[in-house]
Length: 600
Image 1 (spheres, rainbow, N blue to C red):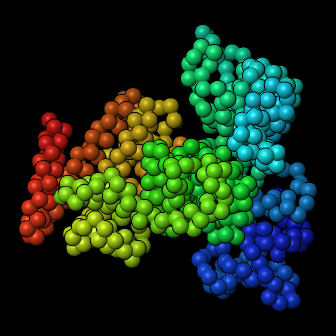
Image 2 (image 1 turned 120 degrees about the vertical axis):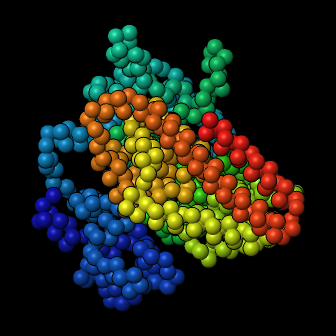
Image 3 (image 1 turned 90 degrees about the horizontal axis):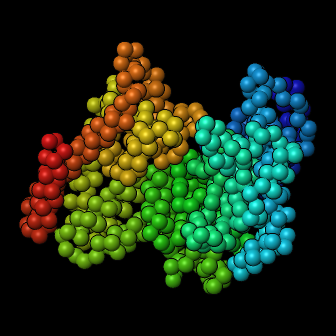
């Protein structure tokens, strides 16, 4: 994009209107507007926009720039992308894009066609919902309280019970390659390894479009109307689009396109589990609401969310999967210094049903009474490990410690620990000593790896985690690391391992690194080369190498726990707490047995 076009856009753009789409501005002079700065946390507005000279400046954090700088920083996009965003909002036609290579032009063309075919599919499903065949779908939506306005706002549709009709309609406008890569169709593999005739992926289902941040449909989630097929086999309630060039589940938040302005204005986001929950809450008037895809919540989604707010209320379903997802979300969000509160609705209801049965005012009251995440976790510990026995206290403490350690703010960490000690009737000095020892171990671990920030064990796992999703070595590493974060949470590569394991690798692996230090570590690890004579055999045995690395991590974690137990036992003996000492001694014996078993 030429400099001349950028200057034209800058001259024609109304900087007050563009920035006002993101934050609330008020007039404070003839040509000046002020508001709360979106780049740092503040209660008194120090952010200023000058309409005459087309610049912004914050007197608090000293961020400054023009309309493009603002959009780049807030949207986390490149300069050419910012020009396109501002031009589009101002109604300025974009010049014909030039490409550096035929491959780049082809990729851009394919991506554009994928956007177009998803828009065509959205319109196809919308029209199908109005057809006689969709009577049951309309009855279901009406029964869930979904109005015509809601259907139109979220472009809800219906996928007919037909294998071929949608393909035949879209094939008139899109080539076979686009149909096959869109994720809208499936195909049976042929005996020669090729792919057969395409058929509709979504059938006899209510469809919910998933949009990107700009509001373009990039995928679908679809709800079945029947629990079983004609042969009595169970049918999955929800079916989602597969990963495509447009869509990666771990990088999208449902409803962000509609909610982002309200999230910035309100100063917080409400996070729910499913599309229907999100739609019901939004249409009830609570606009700053987002949904994950099922219970998945990833580092990439957190980084996306942090562009709009650092305050989140989590209201997942109260079932086992929802509770597990809530705990994982707390861990991920607090580690990134989010302020997190949790809502658990009475009667075990999800947000959609609660609003329909109790009303939006009751739901808003529940949001106002949301618990601090620390209070929620302490209550969870007491529910899971009731009683005042030493065994219950140890288990409750082991449940809470990883969450306490993850908090980056020392004052908040100490407050959480003191509150947990008081409510669980645990000696606060012992808890502080445990946290102090864990911190010392992490510092020592970092110091010992100053020149070599990751062991070969960590490097093996990092290399495995950037392999394709279908690679068995990658699958093994990801599954085990997600299930056992305690194996590596004190290692220098912990942040990178957790990020790579919890989400599909992007096309450029470096994009998965959550911070600069992790990015450097990942780049260095991937830059390392092996001896050409052994590279082939090493590639063949990657799964075996991953197994050995995981066993090493587990063994080292058991050794760390053994050291922690010795410290806790000494403290219990010093205080004369014989019951606690007996419990710890038993755990020490079990840990020693596991170490012996693994070493044989």
